[in-house]
Length: 225
Image 1 (cartoon, rainbow, N blue to C red):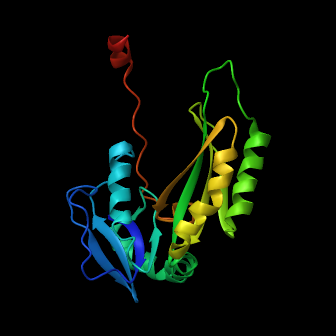
Image 2 (image 1 turned 90 degrees about the horizontal axis):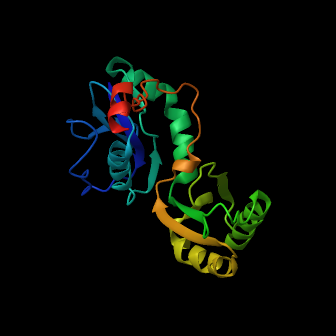
């Protein structure tokens, strides 16, 4: 199967992939009109885990110096025989999506609860959303996504922003006053990243998605206990 990392516009001639990638195969440059699809021939897609997710991200991030990078999510692959027909069928959607993120990167602003103990619940959902709204208003960026974390960790929400590269320094300066005044929450910008949060759904997704990591067997659980 053909495993896909990203669609790239204007990949620098000096680009090369990181030394470690998904599976044993090297990263290919598959032409798609004036664009390039970065991908690899794999027998199977490995299960998603911290290591494989990091390998996928490293390949996508290695192309960030290109004019435009449209990242695929981990596990996106098509059978080898369907590669060219699928890419041609999706080419208009891919070109449109790439045009929306060309010249842009994603900045993620994480909202971290400073006191994760049960005795102090900290800001609630309304307060978090109000803080996110302040960040959005202050940043002056048109495209953004707010996500509550839904987990028990100290990251309680995040706001992803799609911004032109030249605005990175201005963006950080604009949100700094909001971060400094936040009570009970640390406002932590991270990035720049590929624009994962702004990748649209296509008409027909490739369906060779990596299986989840299997749970430990009952015997292993008893041994651990």
